[in-house]
Length: 327
Ligand code: CUA
Image (cartoon, rainbow, N blue to C red; front, side, top):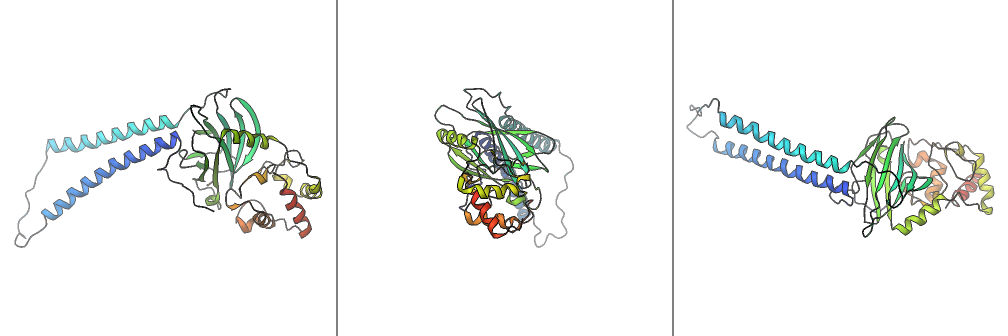
């Protein structure tokens, strides 16, 4: 897949901008300290090096100097104070309390649940209206435009261990902690794909717990929401495949809205084909990769919690054909 920008130095959202500003300031201050300290050290080493003929002479020994003591106590204190104040201001800017969902706010509220090793997105409300559907791994959000701001408020929870939601261009790392609720927000005018990564070691496939945030034009987002709210489409041609799917233990973990498959342990498959990738952003969502995944998920994502079901060729084909109708 094409390389994506994961740099904190290309912010596209206010919290990410605050973090970039703070990083640059801290880097400049600490960089200056480094240059001054190392500069003095090098000058003294060169100037005071031992020369031929002065083996017996010791340099003058100085004990105690009030002005110097005061200077090297006050200067670091001042620097630490400045760093503490700007850090506090940045924290203040990043941590915004979510407002109450109401019409006209343009705000999107999503609950993010971290699982080993994928993301569940429960769409709560948009602009005060209840959404009530669940998506996985690809987070669609509306772009701000003109004077209209469309902030996105995420409530973060974990289903198992600690994870951390991190999309560098949109905001800072926010941990998902079992038994606790955390939150973060972002908003951007830039449309397109923003990638991220789970940033807290959470087990074997931590490195492949990828995040994709798709920022849509508001009209596209509305269309996407409308499609996601629909239950799974019925396609008569796939009815045999549907029956095969529902007869397997797939249904214990996966949900397909509109059918008896009602598991919540694994990604919701109601609109599986609307996603660009499989396995939390690991592989493109193509028939070939889907087949590989259904055949043996351990082959694609070793250690993942979906076992290989050793389906015979006929059942496999039926189920794959059915999955591909879930648009
Ligand atoms: Cu989830 Cu690392």
